[in-house]
Structure formats: structure tokens, C-alpha cells
Length: 74
Image 1: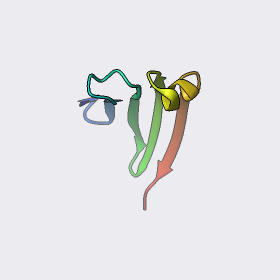
Image 2: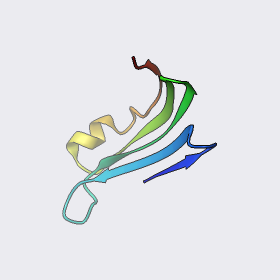
Image 3: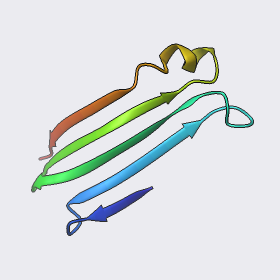
């Protein structure tokens, strides 16, 4: 899911991925915004939340993170 704001210079996004037949075996969700600082320069800021439910995801469920990146395209 995504939406554009501020004359399409700010984009909000959300992604969720769940595993298992009943979607109860773990997964992750990610929310982030992308902001166009200038032409060809973008800033991404967001969070990743790991959801426990099986051995793999239980091992990493406390490793949630915040991320920031700046990119320049030419």
C-alpha cells in the first residue's frame, strides 16, 4: 500500500508478510516514507518489525530496526 503527499514528493508505504496456513507462523511488517529532497535525491526513513510465530522468527523477533538512507540517481 502506498500514498503520495505534498505534490508527490512524499510517498508513504506499508508492507506486511505473514507465513503459515493461518498466517500465525511469523513474519514481518515494514513502514517507510520516501521524500524527494531535490531532483534525483531521495530520503527513505522507516521501521521493520519482526513478528514471532515459529523457530526462525522467534529468534529474530527482538531485532526490530529503524533505517534511513539517502540516494542520488544520475
